[in-house]
Image (cartoon, rainbow over all chains, first blue to last red):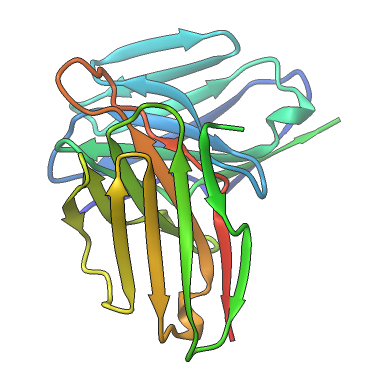
Length: 109
Length: 116
């Protein structure tokens, strides 16, 4: 079966940095994804890692270590609009994307 | 607007009703998905269609019946549901195949279902 763990909630101050960790144990691995979901809205794609290392995209970066079954999403220069749920997902095979329960990030002024 | 449209956005139904959820994508994708999202739980994959053929059926009860008439449309027919089926049902689409890279899923905003 698939096991994807991430913290339930995190709180940070506007302008700060927050790191959301994700550990996974899956039967296969064909890429790790991070999605952002605001309340009442569709999850939207943030990042994709398939090789070890850091992928940077503006204020957001994602890191992967396949040997450790570990990823993190780094959010820099936090803004109020970054308050959302962040979903870690692992793909095994061609289609199946398995998700963690999501981390709710609250940004305070 | 993500390019994946779901209707209705909200649905309340009794346990004996029959209703359908609709999903339409305008992205030229060739695979479509149904996920169930319950509070504080991971998204659960229900069904996957690739090129209009069902390729994944994740042990979903038969009271949920998917239909994919073409690569742009996906339905979820609901019949004799239980209160525990109340959840947000998310549709997604993607472009699969060797040239499609990450095969990123694009989600719709979901249909919030309440079963009384």
